[in-house]
Length: 85
Image 1 (cartoon, rainbow, N blue to C red):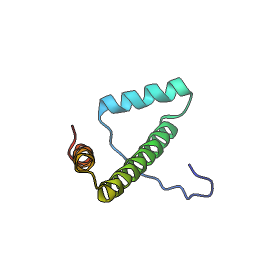
Image 2 (image 1 turned 180 degrees about the vertical axis):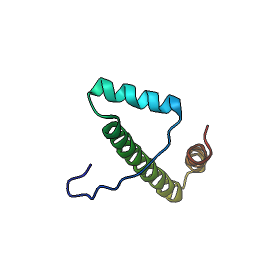
Image 3 (image 1 turned 135 degrees about the vertical axis):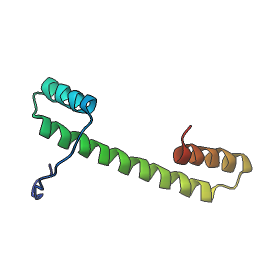
Image 4 (image 1 turned 180 degrees about the horizontal axis):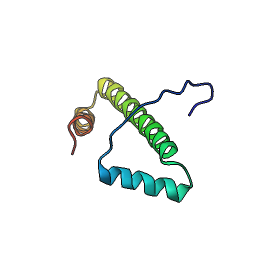
């Protein structure tokens, strides 16, 4: 958790297989399952923010592109980001 942040108690139900994986990760890193969940959530939020920044960077390059081949390549890449492979 970030220094100075307020702690909020949150109840979350996890599928059994996910809970087992979390406990395994926590044990391997010598953390509590709760702390492991916090770290996993923080990592997921950071990954989502990076993904969003990459998309906006790609969109900017797409708008600025003038070469038709580059426009098509960037458009295809954006489509894969939005709709998957």
